[in-house]
Image (cartoon, rainbow over all chains, first blue to last red; front, side, top):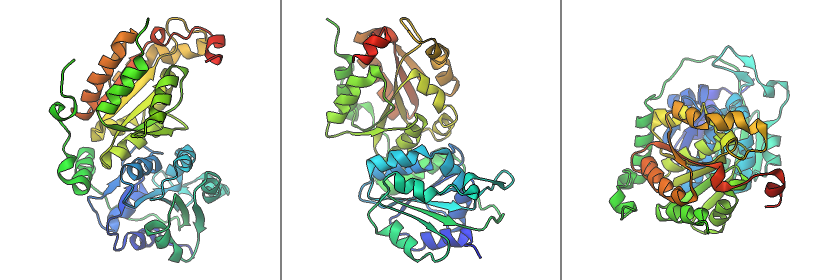
Length: 202
Length: 175
């Protein structure tokens, strides 16, 4: 019996504290919302393939905070090169968790490459992730990886290919961006004016 | 004597507080990449494809940092879909694009993307500034920095092939 995705994500985000979260488009965006929407979650509605890179940018900007990317196998496959880019940068505060149902869930449950045996955790390990695991049963080590273990860390969690009710986050991109920055940065979230940045016109 | 445009551009970026430099290398960006790598206030991030830079820049902005992306004109073609996120979220975006497929191009396969770079960017909502002379590059970057980080827009400075001045395979491989 495979893990159920909503239960996995709910367990990951339980008592999340200061954790910063990026979710890939589609099912994982609905999963994090079902677990409880937060201003410090950024659910993607597009830009397929960029979830892990957004995590890298965020982890580089906020080295004192833990950053979690939750995305699907199809989304990760589209940005597979980003694992190599993250491996070069070695962000200690970043974990990428792929909720791997081996299907393109939003488009008719077509089989992805992982259904044919492509092994994302071994790719991540080959890309110099410090810890890279495939989880099929016990979730035990997963929270440790996300919240404490120095990274970059990677986990592919094999889940059932179930179709679940949509739980939609806000879809206004400007709102999602602004609420995240305000919650994280406070007054510094406001864009600077030229008086602060560039004192003279040339 | 030509002005040292990469040094001027680096100064503009540093003065504006740009901390992250995502790049897919181009011969025309060689010196600027080296200046950014040598700058301890900047983090240079080598990318496998240009679209990774959009995710990088967006994520860094969520975390409060400014990013610049360096690429050549061919790489603009790799960006199209992800520029949709930039537009929808109004993420600040600053790209410095060295041109191929223009005057002096030795590889005809560079021409189609080089001839359409500006139109592709504009079609996806990116403000384009064309730097045709070495003296003007830093000023265009200065303006583009404001467009990106003050007006929360997307801006690209296209650095003309004649500014970079690469004429042949031999010259490029000798760099």
